[in-house]
Image (cartoon, rainbow, N blue to C red; front, side, top):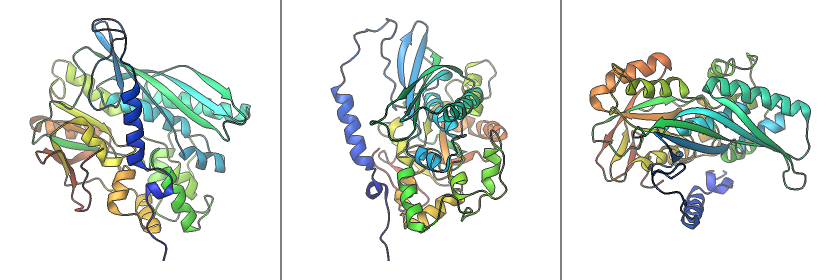
Length: 373
């Protein structure tokens, strides 16, 4: 019997990656721009986006790529959704600091230029920017034979918020309520492990999907033809959900008079990406998070776990497990916020609470506990 798979044995060691990023950050020089100057750094805990001063506003920037999900898209020649992945990974991070995304630029690297591929990517990025309500302000295409072996796609997004209105997580209180927003599937993290599971399964990417694919058509129909009998690749390539609607609208509502919730009601927002639920620990230095009523994961997660013998802890550390974003709101605003978000994004609901447990993420699945990001 083959042993259990995990992300590290597949080629990505999250702990090592974390230490490498910490070393990079420690080596960076501080900005020469001081407080009050345009472009001066603004300390905003959590690390989901970089923030700088800009007069009476703050600008936020995030940069990310699609990652090894592109290897599946390249192999089967289905690139229509990867623009959504690229835009989503960036704008969803900006939302977490309370910023409204306003612009996006892309970077495309290829071994050989291909007008058809570039046209497909351009159309996908354009539709994604429309969904995210941002301007596609430009980008760069590089042909790099000998350096790049296959298509790579990344981008950077710009957002803004009025000075003093950043969302940091530092105002979290014990008893605050966690609202989970459903993902559309695997999104854009963990695909190195996904590809190891596919190899172990013996399935071809072009085989009919070996698990229930009924959620696939509801997502894919936004930008592509719906296939009533999707392949494994098509379901795994379901694009990352863009959360601008409803999350940005909730943030904007909170700043106005008579909004759905008050300006102090939204305590923290976390994008559940690489690192899974451990991302929550980025948002407070002493309080913890308990998920007592998790959203139901899509069937692909059960298939990955079963075929790869992947433990519950590793699944929740690598994947979003059906919940792509978490919003912490004050207890007195929880009911109205849950109802409002759920009416805009069905399936969103209360999943847990902020607890004073010594900065841990705990879960209804007993083995799922995180003490560090």
